[in-house]
Image (cartoon, rainbow over all chains, first blue to last red; front, top):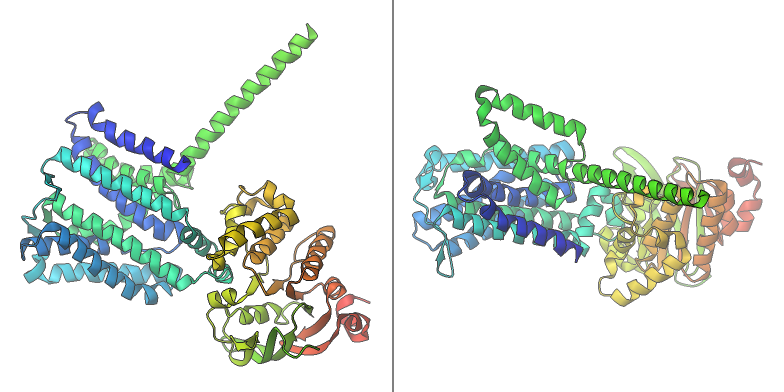
Length: 331
Length: 240
């Protein structure tokens, strides 16, 4: 119930935002891409934050989903929905095949291997110009419609991605709280100890890797339909790094942390535009400051801070109350 | 001696890269027994248990459990077969709650929900402190409490054989006595135990039989009382 409480609060905030700021560029445009980033960060967080397996190539799965949808709908005239499913099947198969050998690696080596995967996929997208349009990308991707409701305006996209985000959060929270979720967290602690508990660590790692890839693929397909245009730049190594930064900044092993990280990393550059030439410098400075002062990540850090403040106040109140009582006793 | 041992190890060897850690270990544990394996630091005690659980690969030799060979069986299947391991240094999952740690121990018992619930109650009875702190992060427990948690966690795997690796490590003498009392009690309740210990006196004190391990070889094996009385053992391990 506690879980649903937090989620409904979040859903309510998402629902109310457009009413509080009607016709606002930040809500209808920036928030939509923040929502997609949040979905990606949540999926990466399952792998990184909970299972402790780093990936520097998560953008690859995002890209495969996006390009499968783009290619099938524009070049072959498919309906978007089966295209999304094909994207899922394609991403899932690839993730499953590479998972076993890659996830045998640990630490820096795993980082290198996933980095390689991301770069290979990116090169494929750039080089297969006859299919993907190469570095120029491809446009004219049709929009989505759900049961006859065509998502054809920024406001409707806000609603669609808001709903998808809430669903993904709900999925992630449920997984983490389940038997498999415990297995993931055990894996993070110590692989040997996890094996001693009877956890099939190889299968568990493969499972979470594939799941994270599948979520990223859906996000990719949705991204392609929403933008109506895809180009390789959106799926480069740098975007993978950005996703990792979102997870770390928000707080590893916290789903809401990942969401918060994604929101901040999407909004901050938009807000810092006023500083023009100094934008990147200030952005970097803010990130460094956050990591120095809230090393557990923003979400958990702020939660702890709030907790402490409330505790202090209630302690003070208690002290004051007991002092009053004593005074009464004396009187 | 009963005709079929629960665990039978034949000529087991194991390596870390080029370095041989186990030089042909043979031993057996019969149903209901509490067997102690004592030896100094670096004798290969932990390696032996890791090789039995197959989280460390055997180079040669055979391990039989209930008559079935499990030398190359995957670790999670060994747990399912009924060998549960309490690792050296406890290895509790620090950020997870005490109860989540215990439930992780029951990972192999997913079809056995009613049993798990009942067993969880029993473990809280055995270690009331765990119940009191069941929502706390396991990493915040003291060493002794973590040891209790590690034992409770392994018991939730419904073990036919419990492998205990150095439960006295880093604990105050009073706590060591408490942990060994619990181990004895568990054995009396019917859990078969292979206990690996540097603290030879305490381990042999509660065991039925014992083996002495030296640089990866079994150099002595006898009833625990005889080993306690043995002059060589006393000199080397008991400080007499």
